[in-house]
Image (tube, rainbow, N blue to C red):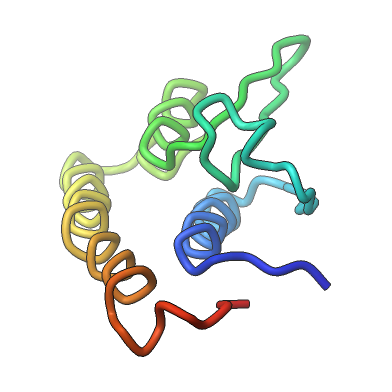
Length: 117
């Protein structure tokens, strides 16, 4: 069984949830050197193949923009208010929730010495 840090798990769940909401198929694989395979050193990352083109994402916002450009995202065909709401939720998570979970993982004294699975 593999272990992953809370920030990595949160990013993985964001990718998986968004892909499920878009009704896009995906496969999850684990690797001990995933951060070395990622374009910016962050795990998890997502590889997307559309036709002959392979694109690697480790940033959730870039994935959302990419899928929208391919007419595969939640915003495609939706109402303008839905797109604005989605962008607001993503911004809220990025600016408020992610820093809070990073604090809980690395700064909060009771968690610093624990391995999060």
